[in-house]
Image (tube, rainbow, N blue to C red):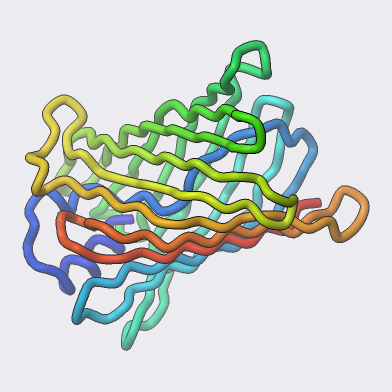
Length: 243
């Protein structure tokens, strides 16, 4: 993850501690999928005006261990215009459902353990609650995560970031909605508003059945706003083969 920041730091103005948090780019959405395995491909970009596009392809394998527990291991790479693609981080994500329909919302605990390829960047942990509810055909999500780096050359403070989504499930193969992400700075003393990052935009998602207990799932989003305190845009795409 810090390798990502190093490349971005070369492309944008110095922003001090605004660079200390990785941008949110995939919404965490938890649900029961016991026994379901998935091959997960993700691709996301960051684009600042007048600067080259930076890209992060990712590949992973996920599994629904139980009705409550989903786990995934994935590798994240970094590249871009004129930059060779190389391994950036190894990640272990775990999502655990605390509720299963007994309340109007579902609540889960999300964690992501991140090993940076550059040992000087240490190990990072992301943890926090993920909320999901349905209003008719509309699905609503709200997540708040804390992120902290350990064992690095320069340990950083605990940062806070958020995610939200509202989407309408028109057909199984087409859900339309809006997503938003942001970084607020240290969890106990938020950065001034001008140095915070907030971005939002449209999202499309859906799935196709391709066999017995087999699905192709997709998601694509285009976000505009602030990234590391500077105006920019992000594109994210995710394809999963679930079986």
